[in-house]
Length: 499
Image (cartoon, rainbow, N blue to C red; front, side, top):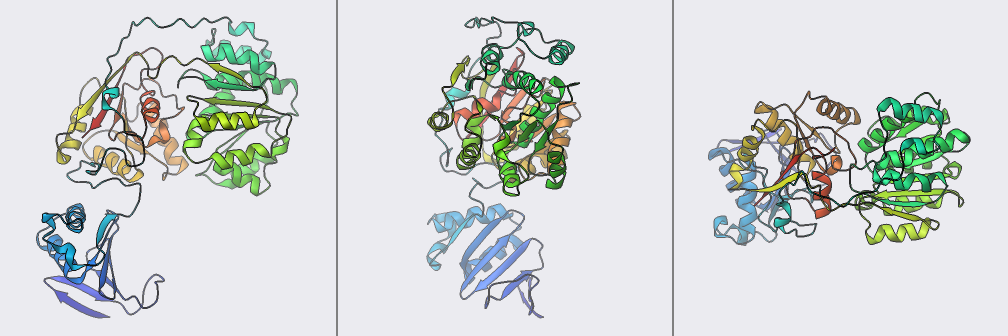
């Protein structure tokens, strides 16, 4: 082991590596944790795992970086911004760009959209949306009109008018449900007659009950039949399963929930019990089909819930493959908040003369007060957020971030600042996500920081505020995010941070 010292910086040149490395690339490890340095010919690569930044440049530039960090005590993100601007030829780079043939400094994840400084988790100086549409920020400003006169949705049925199974009627009465929502009023008769359907409705309008109630009755009439329900996220799948258990209580119908993030062997055991309802996310469903744990040709009814989100998440081909393996003679139900061209093409390909039920009542709820918060500078953004969350009227807030890393760090910093905050994102285990949601529902935590995984389908009561800490990728994403507040005709508030 050879040691080299320069300007108070200690480097160790190990003869043997802890991890397999490409041949002929000696490594230098700093005594400072979370930093790994790779020397390859005359180019140095610095990996800073805490912030996940890469530095590539000449040996001279590297020692300038070391001096900046160890002597001047500048943070990691300062270094990354300094060298990013240097490679672009900015005067701040002190002309260091010319000393390297290929010099760049960027976040290693393409999803990471900017540096973080001063707790602000700010976005880069590039235009707001690198991957999504450019949104006119005036669409984020709208006054709530609690007593607004809306187009009257005529309800032609009561739940007692539908020929549900006796136990389903008892369970509805136990929950105090008497009048269906507009989507339920229009969709239930079509589903009970065995027809295919495309259901379009705003979030929070009761789409889940619209398909569960008639399908439970259908299966009770013939328990040899099976229903496959596909949802985009684990949380939505579990919410559907919870509602199924309430509506089917006392009927002896069984369900199996098949989602990622949990042990697959428990799902094998649940499927061996021959459940009538299988509720799954696309990825885990494809895995179970490949392992021959699920035989798709046995399902005579398929429900795709939040189809637009599944397509946005890149599940077009998996969904097409799943549907193609189902029986030709089947009942297919598509439910979505929007109807983009891809969904229409999918419906035309797989649905048989579907009935379209559309009860959308505007883009956003009339009782949500919407406004923007101008970010004064990157360093003050986090302070603006904590000031907003400290207001007494903010009793239960859902804060949206763009990346998993930003969400996790933001929740950690809020907790460190005395707030009861928790995070939910795709890197969390299923148990962690469930505990966070349960704590939020039960008011054990007051702030839930989330990626868009929580924006669709979830029914969380009494959310007073939705805060977009980053601008959503599309306006549809914005609509679904703020749809978590202002539910059940209660007033809600939505704020969006903009540069």
